[in-house]
Every structure is written in C-alpha cells, then in structure tokens.
Amino acid sequence: MKICRFCGAENADDALFCNQCGKRMENVCPVCGANLAENARFCSHCGTPVLTPAASATAPNGTSALGDATSRQSAPDGAPVRQGASDDARKRTAAAAQRVLGLTGNALALLAALTVFIFVFFIGSTVTGNAGLSGVVSSALTDLPANNLWYYFKDAYTDVEDLLAQSSFYPGYYPTTLYLATVIGTVAGAVALVATTVFFILAVVRYLRNVAGKTEKSPVAFALSAFFSFLLGALLFLSAERFLLDASGSAGMSIDISAENVLNQATVAGICLGSIFLFFALACLLVRNLLGGRISVTGTALSALGGALAVAVFAMLAYGTVSAGFKDLSSRMAITTGFAPILQLAGQISSSFGSDYIPTQYAEILNEVLVGSAVGAAAQLAASIAGIFLLTSLFHALSGKRTNPLPAAIVTFVLVILAAAFSIYATERTQELMELYGSFGPNADANLTVPILVCVFAFLSLALSVAVIVIAAVRAKNAPPAQAAA
Image (cartoon, rainbow, N blue to C red; front, side, top):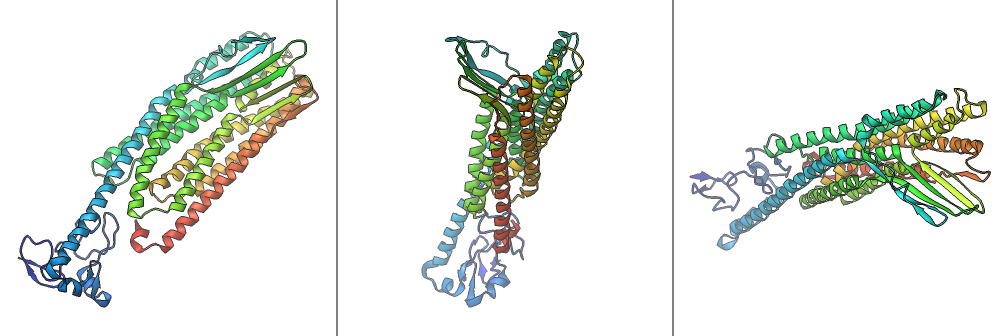
C-alpha cells in the first residue's frame, strides 16, 4: 500500500496518482521524467523547478505546480488523474523530441568534423585565368602547376635552392625573402593540419563519452573548432600563395591578361560539405533549445551575424590586402597579393642587380617591404588562430550554450587591425618600389580598399560580440533561478 506524500491518503501499490488529491505518487520531473530526490527543488537533469510536498501544501490559495488541490478533489469522474496523465505524456513527448534532436545534432557535428579531417590533407590552390596576346589566347597561365600544403614541407625548399643555384651572384636579401615566403606557407599548412586533426580527435572522444553516458558535454564545440581550423587554415594557405593579375594594353599589340590563384576544388568541396553538416547540426540543436525555452532569439541572431562578419574578414585577408597598379590612356595593370608573394616579388627585384650590392635608393624601400610583410604575415597567422576560438564561441551559441566570445573577439580584432595596418604599409612601400624600378608609370596608385574593409568588418564583429555578452547577462539576470543555473 502506498501513502500519498501530499495528502496522506492510502492508495494501491500500483497507483500512479493519488485517489484523493489526484497528484502523482512518485517524485519525478514533470518535463524529462527523471527520478528526483525527496526534497528536490529543481530537476538535476534539465533544471525544471519542482515543488516538494511541503511547498505544495503551503502554496498560496491552496494551489501547487499541478493545479488547485481543492478543484482536483471535487472534479468528477477522476478528471484530475486524466489531466495530470495527459500533461505528463505531453511533457515526456517533448523531452523525447529534445533528446532525439540533441543526439542528431551531435552526430551531424561529428560528421562535419570527420569531413574536414579528411579534406584537410587535400588543401591546395590552383591558377585560373588566361593570357591574350594580339587576339591569341595562351594557356600558359592555366598550365601553371597547382600547389598543395605538402609542397611546403619539402619541395618548396628544394625549388628555392634550385632557383638560387641558377645565379652566381645575388644580394643576401634575395634568399632571405624566398625562404621567408616559403616558411609562411609551411606554417600555414602546419596550422591547418595540426589544429584540424587535434580538434577532430577531441570531438570523437567527447562524442563517444557522451554516447556512453560518461559526460553530458556535447562534442559540438570541438567539431566547430575542427571546421574553423580547416576553413581558416585553408584561407591562410591561400594568402601565402595568393596573386591576382589584371592587365590590358594596346601599345603596339593587344594584351589582355587576367589570372588569379584560388583554392582547389577539393578544398572548396571540404568547406561546402562541412558547412552543410554543421548547418543541420546547429539547426537541430537550435530547435531543441527553442522547444525547451532555453535560448535567446536575439542573441542567437547576433552571434550568427558576428560569426559571418568574422569569416568575411578572414576571406578578405586571404583575397589579398597588398594591392597596387597603374592606369593611363592606353594600358592598365593591377596586382593584388598576400604578404608572402610580395616578399617574392621584392626578392626578384633585388636579384636583378646581379651582385651582392643593392643600390642605396632601393635598399631602404626593400627593407621596409621585408619588415612590413613579415610582421603583417605574423599578425595574420596569430589572428587566424584567435579567430578559430572566436568563431567557435559565436557559433556554439547557436546550439544554446552560453559562451563568452568577447576575449577572443578583442584579441582577434587587435591582430586583424595590426595585419591590415601592415598591409597598408607594405602596399605603399611596394608602390614606391615599383615606381622606382620602372614597372609602374607615373600614374601608379595604391589600392587600400580591402584593408579598410577588413578593419570595418572586424570592428562590427567585435561590436556584435559585445552585444551578445550584454544580452546574455540581461537574460541571466531576469531569468528564473532554474534557467539561470542551466
């Protein structure tokens, strides 16, 4: 025989609800169905507030979490029992749906991490474009070899040695720029490989522990970190090889050249597939938390927008921030590169003097290009690493987790501004170098559009990160104790 813990009435051993007050006999969570301790005030599994028998008995106007006790006792034909059972059934169904969405989201996130882990070994770039000369299109540009990240771990250094062996005399500046540009490519490839692999392994371990019931933590954060390690690593690799050449003229013969270095198809496929899996993973988790009422729509939207702006920042850095050119009545030419290619260009100019001596008028500008490009490349590398944590934090908020993207946003913002500032510096010095060398005419002009846009987008991303923190703090302050603790 069971004794009702609310009214003390005697009930059959198999009774689920009291035959006098209609309340549930066992102390279970009304939302997720988990067993609760006798005096529990909140569910230890989902954080839902529950009332103890004492609290229920002293509730104002004789009411409790399950309704008015007096009306339940006086309701005819056992209506309280049926109403309570119906409510419990709906809550159990909602809890089951949330569990399914959570498991599906975790599985899709792991699949995204697996996808980028596979494709990270195929990161590379290729050259697209054409060269038109007097109406004849040359395939020389499109026939240029495509490089992948493995090239920078061995063959790139061999190529530098072979290039240096072709010249008997050259200034020390020349091999310095060549090796430094190669090191930039090597570091970019290493960051992509190591970071993606490490975060993928952590995601797998977290997922297996979650499935085994050893932890309630989701693998989504590590999966996001793996994806953004792959994405930013690929963009960093592209910036180490990036060039865009656009030239045309009609002096004596018609010239039309357009060529650029872009990510290869395998890298693009990895980005697209990983994005699709992550989109549906975050969608499942977002719906789960909307059903549970544990998410701020405004904060979520701002997090997504801030993340999109941050991705745009790194895409523009990879596009090339060092841009210069000239234009006159009969011809025009423009080049856009990253820090590493501009180093190679400066090194080629220094080697044209054919001795170990660089004329005084060139030495200062060449050294400024070297310093500006080296510091800018280091700032871009550090910004990419910080960006992994920033993007993880912003997009993890879409899964309903409370994150604090502000520290990573501040560090990323400072480093991006530094990289943009040195790209402007390198652009202006490159423009002076090309004018002095004679490659550009008197109408030479530096293009600072991309660095300025990088600064603007970085600031907006930082501002949105601050807004996300403020909204989360206000929501936590106004939320009930159970939600604040969840």
